[in-house]
Structure formats: C-alpha cells, structure tokens
Length: 263
Image (cartoon, rainbow, N blue to C red; front, side, top):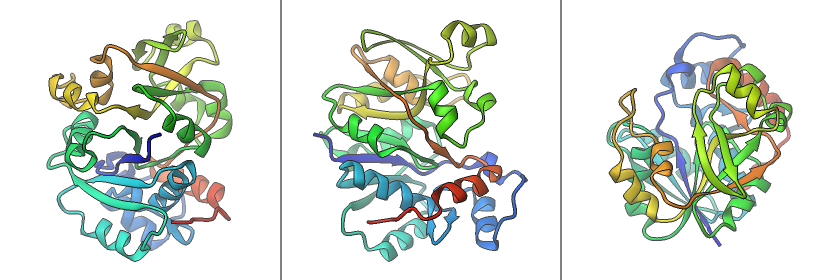
C-alpha cells in the first residue's frame, strides 16, 4: 500500500497575485501577494496544514513538498508544526518548468517507492486519496463532473475548462485538455475530469525525462502520463477545494471552519 505523497507546492501563483474579491486579512494579503498559495492562512492554520492532515487521515505517512530554492518560510512553518503523524521533507525544483519537472525533482526524495501526487493549492477528499493508495499501477483519480461542481467551491464554468478523462473498462484512452463546448456536450454531465491527483509507480520518472516541453514551454505531467503504456482510471464522485485565486479564499475558509487539523 502506498504511504508517500508528493505535494506540488512551488507554483508561481500568478492568478493569486492578481487583484480579486474578498476581504483579506493582512496575513492573507501578504500570502496572496507572494503567490504562496499553500501557505495561505485559513482560520488558525495554513492551507497546507489541512491538506497534510487529510493526507494523513487517508493513510499517508510521508509527504514530500516540492518547493522553490527559497523555501525558508515553508521550512520554518513545518518546523513549527512539529508533526507526529507524518514525516515531512522537501524536494527543490530549481526552476518553475512545469508539473512533470516538479515530479522529477522529487525523484531522490521518493526513491523507488510508489507515491501519490497532488497539488499544493487543492484540498482533496480523504476517501479519494485513500482509494489511490490501494492502487498497484499508475492511476488517475477521475472526478465525476456533476459531483465535483456540487461538492466543491469551483464554479461550473471553471470546471468546464478542466481536462476530460476518457477510459474503457478502467484503462485510460485519452486526456482531452481544454475541451470545446461540443466535446463537453458529447461527454455528458458525468464525464470524468482530472484534478491532478495520481498514484504513480517509479516508472513516471523515466516518462518525465522523455517528454518535450508543451506549447506553453512547460514539461507537463499529463504528457508524461500519456507516455506510459498502462494507466488506469479510478472514477470518484466527490469534491475538491481549490485555492487558485483571491476570490476563492472566503469560501475555502468558510468550508474549513471547524475542521480539525491533526499532524
């Protein structure tokens, strides 16, 4: 059973830096201006605290945070947390060259063990992550679109832009990025979408090394997944809390009010 998670926490936070709605505290405004979404103050904690606590609830015992070379604030925060349920380490991504490069940066920290990969600015449901931990092959957690809209803080128009995952008897057929209106209609309301939650075998590192930059000049984890011969899809009906922009902060804070963090 998988017990390691790689959390992509280096993101530049370009959308978070933009002005948006919401009455932010000075601490939240400072975090938004820095682009450190995972360190956004949410109630008495930081977003990453809720994420790590949920990972621990699912069965994760070791978390590797992929961060920038200048990650002193992250290191201080983890030291203050003094976690008992999790071993927390860091992997440095030297340059922000995409999600596949971020995963590749964690190779030495992970070693030859399987792991789950999640975004640092999302809070995933425990049951979905727990199901990923039981997978013995590279697996994409596919969120049913209707349930995702119902149980998340993500508006339907934003979800409509997410990649559609097509599978046949659980085997990945295609990941359709930026679907058109016609493709969305053809896929139907319960189409599976990707929220960047995967169970990976060590083979992913070689796949990350083989791919070329995408049209936007980044090494994309979706391209590395496409390069693998056998990828499974695990359908899941549930929600994800997303903290991509300032407008998200109030709703995320409301939904996490009273949620206990145990690290």
